[in-house]
Length: 161
Image (tube, rainbow, N blue to C red):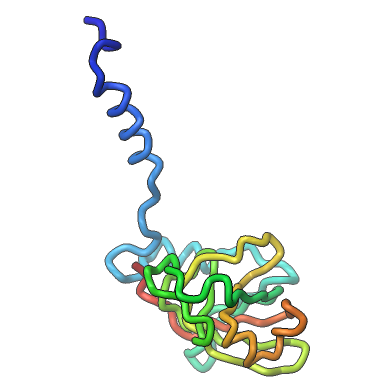
């Protein structure tokens, strides 16, 4: 049988390929599963990243690195979580944290801190660990410099989408 005469076959193959490449949500059923918890507890640690057990039960993970922010050019556009971005809100983008995760961000240069909620993906610059909303960057006093060394303290894991 000559399959090249069937017009839907190439389209079907492309569609199956695209479906196979589509990634599923990292956190299904609104909960962090045991495998994810284990992978988070075995993150490779370096001088940039440290992890500790929370003695108070509130700090779940600690990371250090460089933060940046995004503002006007993305204002009112849709974030990866499906929310409309508000540059004045206290939100942030992280590559892997589930949406809804609460993170205390501490500017290591001036000790100012802010609690943000993860609602977007990023940053897309390899050397940065979080992208803050303009409002959060203003609270940390990094608008003028654009970036700052920060400590992230995860206070509560989000349920994701």
